[in-house]
Image (cartoon, rainbow, N blue to C red; front, side, top):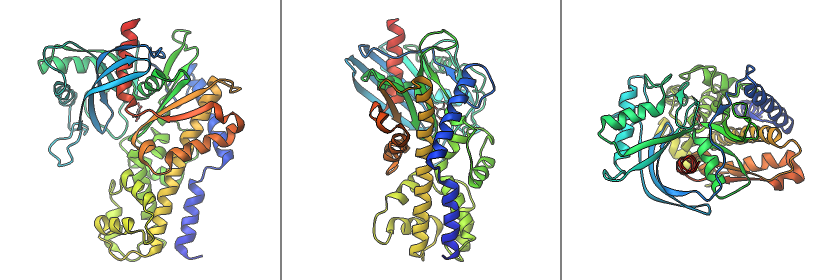
Length: 440
Ligand code: BGC
């Protein structure tokens, strides 16, 4: 075997999660959930949402704000009951302008800059003479004491805007709406995007009890049968992206060190779209030492810098099924100024991309197993897991890899567990949340 292929073999070993590893991760995850719920030290925050599952009969017209980290989206959604809804209007803007004109998520921006921008996006959809109750999806760890307040605990996904952590994000939004002269839009609920995804799935599926995002970030929420704060059913935001008790490769450790917040969000940095491209880049950079893209100083220099490779590039590498892997060859030419790649170079890059994506899907599935064991130890009931996010929706083979990983250990009980795309879950879920709290 040549040097490059044996180096690739080593990468494969580091990134493979065997069936026994899946079971161990599931077990540890379940224990961390219990520890988090009972106030013991745990990498899982287990945050209360003060929301429970909808009946599916909720109706009404609501504004939904979805602030996830890449874009801010505003929806005008109408719930029609019987699990049906219509989106009447939709507006989305990136939080960081691709042309560099503004960036509301860097450490140079303030909470006022960010929330004024968000309020202006709301004004794009809200007519000035109509009253709108608004559901606010805030997709970061936050501590709630009821469904309408949320103190931001910390940023994730490399966001660094000043003055948000420690504040109530609905207060920040309300103040910004006032500054922008918008008095007819009133935030009534604040929720995590995973909670919204679960609400969306549950709006038309009574078996839904787990909601997950695998997009820029990663996290899962579930319906806890007896939450410690109320001794009743409540959706809990696990903040599973921070799960830390799992084996990591040297590449994960290198990546962690160059992130905004090392030693946090370890699972998210192995699974989510914000980081998958970075992992492939770091592995490719390492393989250059074993002969990948041989002798190309430019390619080496470019690959040494963060963010040259995105999750969309990883998806393209995997999807390239042309005999000569021309998509990958073009990418190398356009991004690394490397016009003379060999077939082996391209196959190695495609293999690394597939390994990184497969590991992400398997790790996420392992956490689902941990949650299922916690809520239904003998697996007697049906469970629908609603998943939203660009990676789950668009990464070739991702959804299949996730389902297959779940099926292996569940065997004949696998028929009780469904994993579905809950498209726009975080947006629609905010409308469902407002409707639930209004009908109380
Ligand atoms: C955040 C979670 C969020 C997830 C998906 C993570 O970085 O901590 O709150 O649910 O991203 O958007």
